[in-house]
Length: 180
Ligand SMILES: Cc1cc2nc3c(=O)[nH]c(=O)nc-3n(C[C@H](O)[C@H](O)[C@H](O)COP(=O)(O)OP(=O)(O)OC[C@H]3O[C@@H](n4cnc5c(N)ncnc54)[C@H](O)[C@@H]3O)c2cc1C
Image (tube, rainbow, N blue to C red; front, side):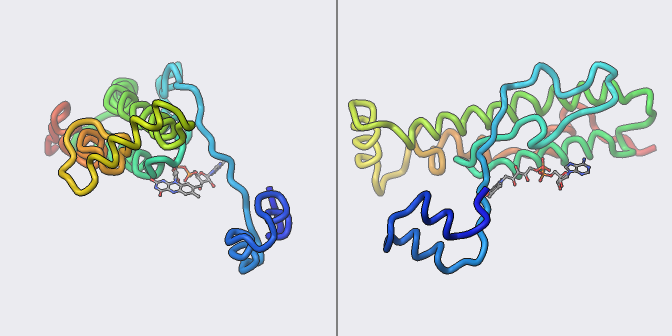
């Protein structure tokens, strides 16, 4: 970790660059490692009384700005499953945690995989693949996008999947709320 802007400037920038000018404006800098991890076999412990959510089980690269969003989705689903209208007895905890995992694991890990795909598409080395990507992006400039698009920030397939998620509908579909 860098503790001084000077150390960061010395490592990453050359004298007079825009980045060194920007770093010259701050008193302190921190360096974050971009972390991800292999998919886990289970987010629920063998005793069935503890579940991981958020970065603890699906940390991701920041290519889609989805780490916090997907963690909040986890929290919303877990909260709804554990709400008094659905969760009537502690004896139901193992089933509830398994249901949570069933609802959330594939999506959380799916978002992580999209971040890797975005990293690949954004960082193609010069060559035929990069030329194909650039040609596609240029061809689509100013048009209504259709089908898969290399930038998932505007891709008409990825965007509705990312932002159309409704935690309440997801839970209601499998465990409708019952008033006691
Ligand atoms: C620079 C940066 C930019 C980001 N930008 C975005 C973005 O634009 N959009 C987005 O969706 N996501 C973004 N993220 C990712 C997002 O911040 C994380 O994915 C999200 O905070 C994960 O939430 P979490 O609750 O799982 O974990 P955390 O937010 O890490 O919360 C874990 C909490 O547990 C506490 N804790 C740890 N150990 C213990 C302990 N032993 N006892 C008690 N408490 C403990 C920690 O102090 C912390 O408060 C960004 C992350 C970084 C670093």
